[in-house]
Length: 221
Image 1 (cartoon, rainbow, N blue to C red):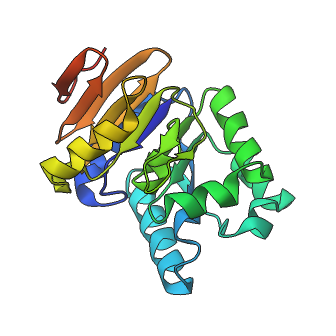
Image 2 (image 1 turned 180 degrees about the vertical axis):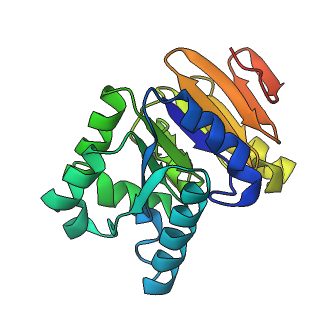
Image 3 (image 1 turned 60 degrees about the vertical axis):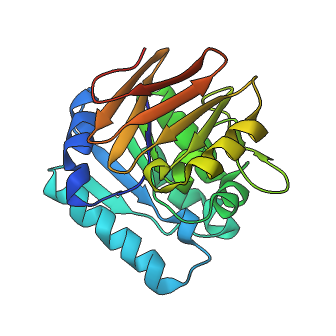
């Protein structure tokens, strides 16, 4: 299961979303929070996201730890990868999508995350963490290939904060062969196999070959 979050990770408005995700697990939640996307922002920001994630999921009754996977060396640390592998819920918080992709791509940490998914666990990503899960990361002048766990998808977080003109420009650059998912704050697009469902207080705008549609809580395909 994938959970793509527009913004608001670890904050009170996201409690209902994360309770939904934890309830979908077949066993008690064992959460690992990875502040990797903020790895270049300094110790204070890394500590902030780590503490916020631990406080949030502890409040929801899960076993949780934040791991310092913040650069390539730590992403290739076998001991940290082993701790990721023991989780059934991995959360990638926000920051720089390019840095997150570069740090995790081909690493032991990323292989461990994929093992969590393959064993029936959850990968959640907010903002930058959501963007790397799609096929490509929007950017100018060039778009970067992402992890493509949702093939053909371009994930645009913070969708409720973007201007209509900027959204149209992103859609133009995405082309007709890709589907744009614009995810608002405090909202997750939950992907479970071939089923997509919106969970949270906001909307997800889906813009693909068949045009544009808007999904709200409980809707999808």
